[in-house]
Amino acid sequence: AQSVSQHNHHVILSEAASLELGCNYSYGGTVNLFWYVQYPGQHLQLLLKYFSGDPLVKGIKGFEAEFIKSKFSFNLRKPSVQWSDTAEYFCAVSQYVEYGNKLVFGAGTILRVKS
Amino acid sequence: EAQVTQNPRYLITVTGKKLTVTCSQNMNHEYMSWYRQDPGLGLRQIYYSMNVEVTDKGDVPEGYKVSRKEKRNFPLILESPSPNQTSLYFCASSPVGEREGSNEQFFGPGTRLTVL
Image (cartoon, rainbow over all chains, first blue to last red; front, side, top):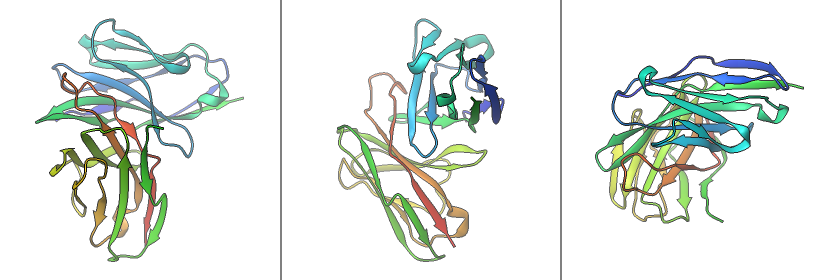
């Protein structure tokens, strides 16, 4: 079965610091990869997704992620974080089931940005 | 506005008292799913449905039931809730695309359930 691991459960950064959140998955076949963000008290929103093509994917709010197939990784990056980026971030991998897809989520990384 | 709605948003109940959490989407999506979110565990899938009258177990189905009588609705039923079902529950929906696993899921606002 597919599994997703996120390297850090809690990250604390100062504003303007650079961010990189690690994500590794276990499945060796064709994958679709997602990063979701959950702001305090809100539901999950899609940050970015990778299906195929350019392995460097740009998402909303200045986030990007790089798919490295050889490393089974899909790390999330942002050059300069803001206080408003404080949230929980989830990496997810789409696993094919009989008639469609299911998402397998990592445990999440809580990011706190200090102003 | 395209959205997934859940009700109630907050619920406190007692062990053994049957409850239903409703989920509805207005995007005509075929696929719907229920997840529970627990600290340090991320989101785990409870049940999913590929279309009307087609449902299947996810990773943590024990203690839950679902039904899909209409395309837009996918209620989650706890026949006899227990304290270990205290959690944050999310419903999600997506279209079923041409490419396997290629579709973004849209999430509801969540239901925080406490079972005493």
